[in-house]
Length: 417
Ligand SMILES: *Cc1c(COP(=O)(O)O)cnc(C)c1O
Image 1 (tube, helix red, strand yellow):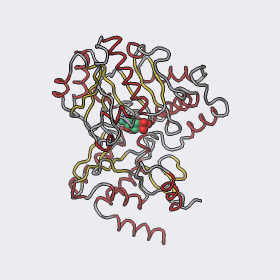
Image 2: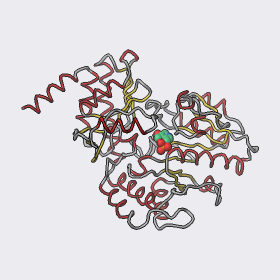
Image 3: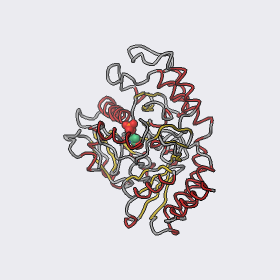
Image 4: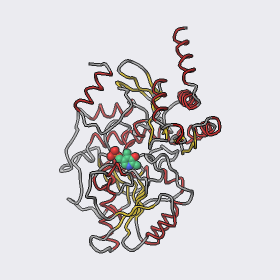
């Protein structure tokens, strides 16, 4: 059965309805392009929420996984495997942290950071048992576990899933004074996305991260940066916190750590924090398995060898400058903002929501996804060519200027001719 309608019907009939995807059924992909079951080609401007920064089905990562799978896939951490040590060495030397703790999904890595911060609070900072507090921010997205949704400010994420884990305080994102006022002896950590992705590509004012860093230093608390989406080149730096020249105590990574091949996540930290974990304190059956370790090593090598961080900075600056013109050239666009190849096009409420534009783009062969109703998020693979990016930007400009019908006609004429 390869018909899109039938395949969608199967999903609807037998799956949980916890997503509302665009109705494009993808069958294969290469680089920045994907093909649906009818053979129609699309430019991917979402890159699986930045999990495929290296481009779809990257040949080097593919070769690594195909080499590893017939040899050894899983030992569990009851035994050791020959890929884990070399991966630890590579990822820590690349990022400048002393240690790495591997998990699988992003949410698990966030949970790991929370556990590390709490254990650190009790064993190193001297917080009274059960009193440790972590500061988080409105509009955050850190994943979907019950603890994590418990400190979301989005009602839909929490609705019906309580009771929730205590010990979190939600503050306005970017409000330096509010954070200063919230610091007390029980605060063991501040957990932040350096740029909020799901929240709509929200960039805090310059100096905000520096302020958090100095508050953490002053009050002996840990700064935990969730770089699951913003990290690994997306914003034109290896990590988004580098835009402010700070160093967090814990960096949470996932998504592009495997270039889309396999769920791999984890936290980076120095010994002072990582040493709070003793055998039995924390773990994961698949965390650190040899396929994950091999794939993540190659996925990081690709980022470095292909200069994808620098490409993101260059192409991102170009794309943002170009799309910014839409603020004056159309009635729909309120603001274009971004860092690197991570761009939010925020529409006025009068535009009628971002989804209809995403659907119009889908018709034209461009895939992107609205976030928070009024923002079109643009996040292509960092390996995208300037030529492909130009074509995608042209489609976005046409759709937002209401010229898409003209474009479709021209395409038909081109095909007919
Ligand atoms: C995607 C994401 C997560 C959760 O990752 P999963 O792999 O879906 O569990 C957490 N934090 C941020 C910032 C993310 O973008």
